Amino acid sequence: MLEFNPRHPAVLAAGVHLPPTPRKVPTQRARGQVLRALAAFGAAEHLPDDFAQWAVEDFHRYIAERRRTTDDTAVRAHITVIKLLHQFAPVLTTGLPADPWPGQTGAKVLGLVRESKLRTAVVEPRTWFPLIRAAWTYVDVFGPDILRARAHWKNLQTTRLHLGAAQQRRRLDAWLADPASRVPVWHPADPLRHPRATTPVNWALLTAVLGLAGSSNLFAPGTAAGRLARARVTELVAAGHTQPGLLPDLTEVERPDGTRGPWRHSLHPLALWIEYTALRNAAFVLVVGLSMMRNIEVRDILKDSVVEYYGSPAVKATKHKLDPDLPIRHWWIIEPVAKAIATAAELSIDDEYAFASVQAKSPINHFDSGDAITCFVQHVNDNRHVTGLPQIPEQKLAPHMFRRTMAMLTRDFPGSEIAVGMQLKHVSTRALANTTTQGYTEPAPAWAEHLRTAISERRFERLAELFAADGRGEPIGDGPGADRLRETFAAIRAKAAEMKATSQAQRGDLRVELDLLRRTRLSVRFGKLNHCTMDDANPVGAKCLEDAIVPEGHQGPLIDRCQPSRCANSVIAPAHLPIWTAERASLTDLLTTRKLPPNRRALLTEQLHEVDRVVRKAPDAPSNGVRQD
Image 1 (cartoon, helix red, strand yellow):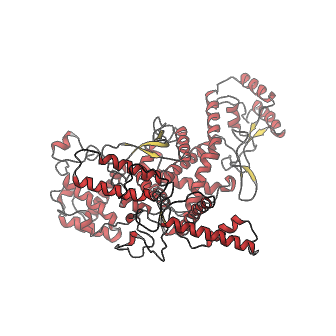
Image 2 (cartoon, rainbow, N blue to C red):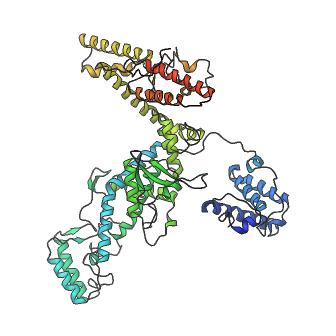
């Protein structure tokens, strides 16, 4: 209660001053478990019920006992709770008169060393791809069917009436006379069908389709009138006028056995309860997997929170973690994520939150994020013989693992370090991604081979684009690195022409050239400010390596020491020039500021000289303001 009400007058009057933000419920639940464990230890050791009467040595023995069976990182929480009993002593009836470890943190007591390496595991590629594919299929392909059936069922519920026996029979007569009428039937393999059912007709659903209340006895098998009504419906079934559940048609899929059919045997009310939850869980997997948002931030997404932010779709959400005022932040998202949020919001029965319970009988706190992922995986695997979705290998999954995985996947794309830092909201700490972001983007062994192949293919695509542009006579860039690229491209075309002339090449010229380009040992690293052509085996002219201490095992350039204006490996492409010219204009404006400190002016002037050296390499670049010194 103290940590739920840190600014309560009684707390402040007792001289206990806590941070203004109340603790989260999961944190307090965990601390309650520590207190129970402490009490159980006291009972086993025949210690007083009042913790205040324990000796300091008793707490030391408790921690020693915990360390024998529990990891030290988990034991630290027990030390924290014990120290809180002393900190809160002025307000507690059982507060400790002394701190068992005065002046020491839990980490220091246990001798823990802070690890710079992030311990969060990644979702393995064998799990990631089928899971994300299944989630998107549910939202994009199955979701429309589920929502359509949901709307139809809601409409049926609002039109059901309590009618007399004669009125019910007249309504059945009119329905049977309509040639468009279809009898909802069970699928023989449907596990939700009652095991003692003697007919294929879903009588409860048919009663709703007729607009009759659930208490109707129109089809009661114990009465003569009920048996007659059933017989008339059975004749319609024999004539083939049936449909599987609420909808006559469901989206068809290819199944593992090679057959084709609807993604579900039928969508009837009982099945809908299951599919509502599966669809909500699929939407949660997509959002937590592809947005880099924390679990609690996803859970705090409100309905109608998808907006446009700086020209791109974004979701407004409350940012958590070390933010006492819990500010609203914008998270850039892609269209599939936006669709997932809209789907979850439509299913949610909560007035505000997009991710909540989908059933009126289940309050919002029954939605557990970890269970949502686990249940979705289990649901997909249990029904893949019908849905056609791939098997998802079992792996222990948690929401924060998706954030870590997506950060790692984007780390090697040009310019991604800043972008990932902004999406992870660590950019406020430093202009570039800080150590936390670097930990999230650290490569994982499980993804090594896949990423190596994917990144190599993407780099070759970019290289082939440069090759094609050079072949069309378009400028590909300026600088010594660009000159070497043009020489290599010319040599490849000459070799291809020679192979064609000597009949060594049996395929088209372009295909031969691309094959030669792929086999050519050509290293190009593509960037937002410049491209680097440094050869790892012969890094001649690499300014970033001059007088530098290269970390053990490191290969390639040191990006943070890159000097595009001076390096013999640098390529300034046409796409880079707008950035450099904009930087030059910005620096020029800053230098016009009056009363600029001399050291600041000198630094800006040197930066402007560096930018000018880059821009001068491009003959077509704007010349206004370019210094010639």
